[in-house]
Image 1 (cartoon, rainbow, N blue to C red):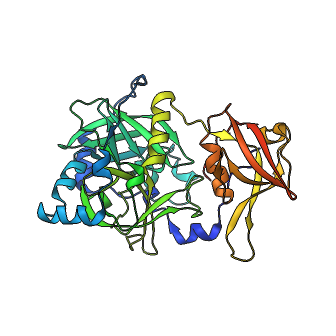
Image 2: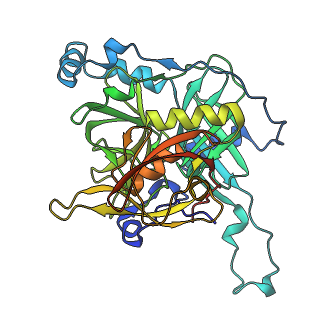
Length: 391
């Protein structure tokens, strides 16, 4: 039994529309593309490659937002960044095989069984390597029996799933295509509140679209969307179909993968969330190398420790320790408060989960804990985090 996962708040789910997971009726253009693609038998799994990710120069990544904006105005808006990013963003169409059709007398009425046509949906993705690897959201391809990708130039290709990670809502696909243009990854440290960003994707299936806004906030978590949350918040307009698409800076470098929006209407209301490039790259590289994501595991449940004077969280108190788990074997006990891991401060339970998960299973980590009034340093050999499926 896994005790590390942060509980999901029901109220958060009511406020947040995971609109990108919704099945959307595909437009006429999409249907034509799908027909051009046509169903094809699944081919053999492709062998993993060692891929080289394109990284932005540090000087360009460190440029301030005002400098970028002034340069963009001189060069004719954001056309250069939009063109660069758009060449690496694809449209993704998925289809689920319809369930077995029941005889009329077994159905509640004699009307046409709409499910017989199967469920279709759409999303976006980002080319990350010339070998045909595409990064997208897990919920875009989850449960799909057929996946087609509209590449730049309107070429349609069959895609195979290399691996998925439901806990971060990321997935990697692969297509057999030549001449692909991988996106350039921005320096994660370059993303700051107030930076100009562009969202590139396929909203509502109308075709590739670019919208502009700013980074409204960073480090958003506890939204109840994913197990691992560290979202970039933006007011760039993103809508159903943008999911899995690129959030880029004014140089066209990838800063995040658009994932969800806060909305009461189902459309953009100025609050969108993107998975930061740091987490996206970490997950992507593991999936490409091994087909899966491995994370460290402590085997505890915990709660935030709140300082009454300020109301701020100042650590993670262990509520329960799984018998025979990594924490138990290392001597950690219920009631201990974790203050730091390998010298990095742990402010709350979300930080405890994230920092533990970032350490490779089998590695030893130094935990600074408070037991009563005594400060202790405990060496913990982390285990393999069990796979947790989203509910």
